[in-house]
Image 1 (cartoon, rainbow, N blue to C red):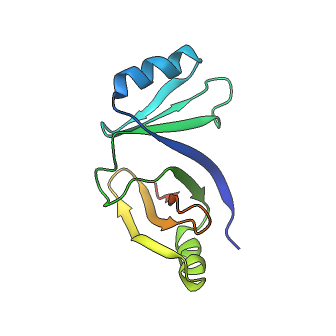
Image 2: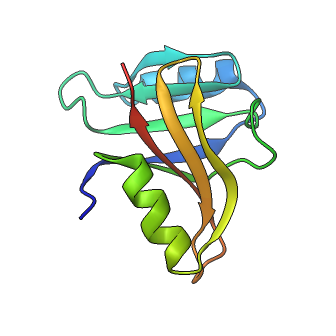
Length: 118
């Protein structure tokens, strides 16, 4: 059985700098920045995170939620076997994650399911 490690909302931004400044006012620090996506976290509660993106630079669609799991390949197989719509097959990314995108059937939302590889 797959275990979820964390869930991170992904907000679309037109201005990464303005988003960074806004979340800093709420006490969040930018802990990751790849230019097209950044993650902000609370220093007091590091698991309280959200990401902002201008659009996924490495995939055809942009997710609204990232779900980190302990075994991304097992998650992929379980969802694929259930008939879930996979939008982006599992792939190792240069920033140290293996991920795939799937559509949540109730809402139609695109989810990024991932595991850290490094």
